[in-house]
Length: 325
Ligand code: UFG
Image 1 (tube, helix red, strand yellow):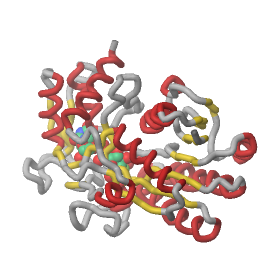
Image 2: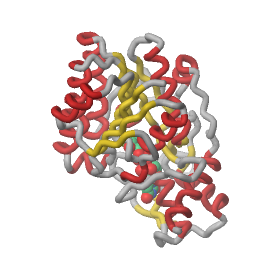
Image 3: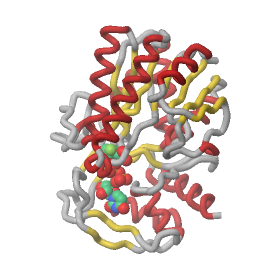
Image 4: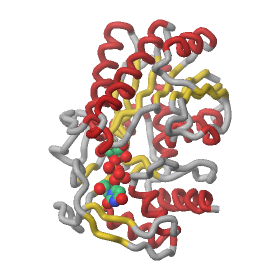
């Protein structure tokens, strides 16, 4: 049993991670400022309401607990918002993360798992995208994540802080047991929005562009089940505990599905009618984003359990129905 700090553990991915860590028998402390997270999504362990910008709080926390690892899910994640409010993104995703890392170094905590993103690659120059694909982010969100990956390289070199950066493609789905799911406000992600259109919570779903260079003209993404994503975090921790050096891994299923395929699958899974409205392209959306995750499979031994889009949507649908009742 190890002691893990989960920063941002009240959010979508963090809350699933806390549940998995507790299941594994670990001692979990969640730190979350509840700016976007939900207290009731933290299903156990210790909960502290607070911010990683608060050095005194971190100092106190690190004096009180001897953490074997820190996982960091407390970032802003909306591309469009990052273009309008770059200061907010650089302050939270970069400056505050450096405060956290700095305090970890002071407290001699040497293992860090960082939530990175496919957005660090910008417009892909080739598909599938492996770890060596050029990092040329095209918005402040992607740049903020790429900056921290570089900071982490320097922190390993100078201070011996070892880390794994996990570059998520499209995190989706929900806890198979139905206890947790996606609860963003406002919701911007495709799968929950499509399912809200299926349940009647929204009148329709808008498809952002049908004129992309893809077989059906809609954008292609690589959807990865939230449980598979969390599994990769557990393996990444173990990898660091075994003494391995810092690394970066792309996390996706390696298979792309178009927006139209997601809608068709949601119609099949839910048996509901889903009204579709065609809209213009959304700024900054590449036509295709598909991961090459061979490294994660080979080095971490990662094996996605819920790779099928049907299963991802089934679990998200179970959550949508529960949220309605
Ligand atoms: N889409 C629609 N209609 C909607 C919402 C989305 O057509 O109402 C489309 C988007 O245009 C895109 C696809 O559905 O083609 C997926 O969009 P999401 O917003 O669900 O996900 P993104 O691929 O834009 O974003 C994800 C993560 C981000 C991360 C990005 C990396 O959620 O945090 O991948 O490129 F930055």
